[in-house]
Length: 61
Figure 1: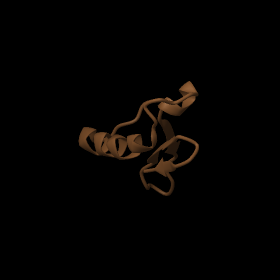
Figure 2: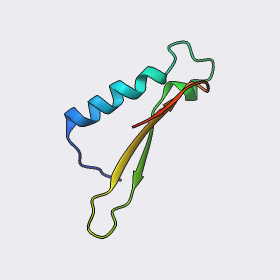
Figure 3: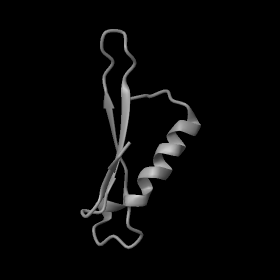
């Protein structure tokens, strides 16, 4: 899969959601981002969602 986005917007989103990632996570999966792509519809561009959680707090951008 290939996505095209502006670098500054992607970095901004990642900086916001990384606050939910614990630096001392007991589960390695909690030290990552989830990238979810919604497909384009009716000539609307697709949407990229980023998520992170530490099982107490979760953020989605």
